[in-house]
Structure formats: structure tokens, C-alpha cells
Image (cartoon, rainbow over all chains, first blue to last red; front, side, top):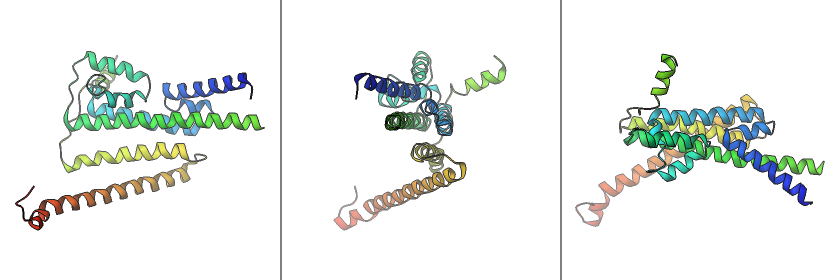
Amino acid sequence: MSPSWKDNHTLFLSVVGVLAWLIPGAGHFALNERRRAYVIFVTIIVMFFVGLYIGSVGVIDPVGAKPWYAAQMMNSPAVFFLGRISTGGDYLVFGRSNEIGQIYTSIAGLLNLLCIVNAVYMAHLQVIEQEEA
Amino acid sequence: MNALSLTLLASFTAPMQIDTTPAAMLWLLPLVVGIAVVYKATKVSSIRPIPFAKETGVLIGSILVFITAAALILYGVAWFVNEHLPSLLGRPGF
């Protein structure tokens, strides 16, 4: 196994992982898994926006709810900007709306983490298959 | 920006009113659907609509059955601890 191959392999897996994090499903899309990518994209985006609709943008709280925010960040780096909006504005949310909104947005993020890992693994398998062919 | 866009954006700035009632548990259902769809999307070898829908449906049903079973068991334990255990131990209550 030459170092250059390993470097390219690592770069390829990293690009797929980053794509999958930037846009849910983009990692699978890059691997020509189009249907899988559409299903992942639609489901995760809908779950995330349902959570935002239920609890408002206030459920993204980088200051008072750091563990939830960490999970929400797995959706996309765009959550960082929503966190800035939430911190800068006056978006009070508490009670059941806050809980359900946080659960929806955080689980959407954790599911995207699963998809990121899956996309990287599929990319790895593709590279192995190409090497063996 | 037109009025519709502003209304849509505004709907994400104020939380919904959700009461602390048993009906609020129904918010679990869309979550279970989402989890099952994404999980199955990562697990199946290829996505074909009907087999995918069947597998997802089975997973949704399994999750709901196990959640219901867990809820019933926990309810039974709570009921026993609150209603019967104090008299068995000869204490007025917890």
C-alpha cells in the first residue's frame, strides 16, 4: 500500500464526510447513491424544521443547552449561524415546546451523524472494490 | 420579500403551544417515522420504494410495540410501588 494511495484514500473519505455534514445526504449523492441521498436529505431536513417550527429558533441554544447544541450541530454547519441568531435575539422558549423542539432537532443531527459515518464507510468500500478490481 | 415568506419566517420565531397532556405524546410518532426511515436508508442494500416502505413500516411497528410495552411495564411498576408496596411494608407511603 503506497503512501500516496493512502493519502488519496484518506482525502476521499474526508471529502465524503465533510460533504455529508455540509448538506445531509450529499455524501451519498457524491457516491452515486442518489435515492438514498434524497431519502436522507428530505427526512433529516423535515425533522429539523419541524423541531424549529415546534420550539422556534430558540431551541438552538449554544449557551444554556450545550449538549443539545452539539447534537444539533451534526445537522450542518449552518446550525452555527442559527445559534448566533438565537443568541442575539429574544427567542424565549420553555416547557414542552422546548423539549420537543430540542429532541427533534437533536435527533435529526444524530441521524445525520449516522449518515456521515455510513457515507464514509460506503466510500471506503468503494475504494476497496476499485483496488481489488 | 412577500407577505407569505415573512409569515413563514415568523412562524420559526415563536414556539407552538403544546400542553403537558397525554396527547403531547403523539409527537413521538413523526419522530419514530423519521428515525426508522433514515436508519433503513443506511441499512438496505438498495432503495426500491415498496420493499423499503415495508421494511420501514415493520421497524416503525416494532419501535411502537416496544415503547408501548416499556410504558405499560413502567406504569405497572409505578402503580405497584405507589398503591401496594407501602401497605406491604407497613408504612403510610413514600
